[in-house]
Amino acid sequence: MIDLHVHSSGSDGTCSPAELAEKGRDFYAMALTDHDNCDGVEEFLRVCGSGHRDSGRIRLAGIELSVDPGEGYGIFHLLGLGMDPENEGLKGLLHRILDGRNERNAKILARFESIGIRIPADEIAAYAHGDILARPHFAKWLVDHGYSGDVKAAFDAYLTPSSPPETKCYVSRFRPDPKDAFDAIHAAGGATIMAHPRYWTKDPSALRTGLSRLKAAGLDGIEAIYQANEPGETVEHVRAAKELGLCMTAGSDFHGSNKPSVTLGMDVDDEVAFLRPLLERIGFWRNA
Image 1 (tube, rainbow, N blue to C red):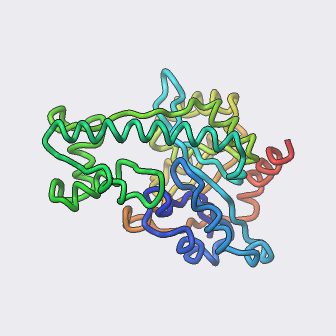
Image 2 (image 1 turned 135 degrees about the horizontal axis):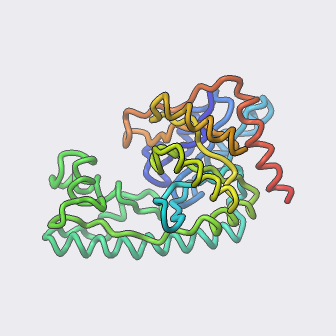
């Protein structure tokens, strides 16, 4: 069992990093990949402890970033795996992303105010367990205060680009371009992996064209095996990775009770062989 895509309360999950370490104690490989920050990594790795390494189990520092590849392709999510969270270049990029989030959140609060929903800044800040205040926290506030029946309804009504104009409070935010994100993760010794490509495009030809372009800019691999994939999507993503010479990973995108249908852990055939190309790639960037 492996899982290289897991979120804690450090972003928009509900389990602490320590709880995730315990839940995945028997996994062969696991990575904590919170959105836009590595704040929970130290706790996660500390609770995992040296016993995992001594037994041949693999635990990686990770992160998930939202990246804007430019004209012709939509925003995609990027996993950084195996990097040093204390690398100054990476920390600089994360500070810029956090500033962008804070600017966006202030605009969201103002938009809610304009439609008659006042969300106190200190109150919504308490919904985040760290620096990362995200749209799921706004959605949870709306549910708790009776404006929506559930988180999905809150997103649909208020927090997406396609929300109704009269209630839409969605605001876009700063997202790094691929080259800047790739360079920062590589400089920190990590590998760059496109998360859940099913949400980027379902067109096989567009997928290969886009992945080829991103590989030339520094993409190392894709999350070919993803819990929400349809069987045919997994087949297509594995095929594309092999054709383009990209590493493959597997992840659940676990968020605890925020996504109750998603369970922790992914089964893959021959875990050691499956992960070898990724680990070799991480070794390459660490020794670069």
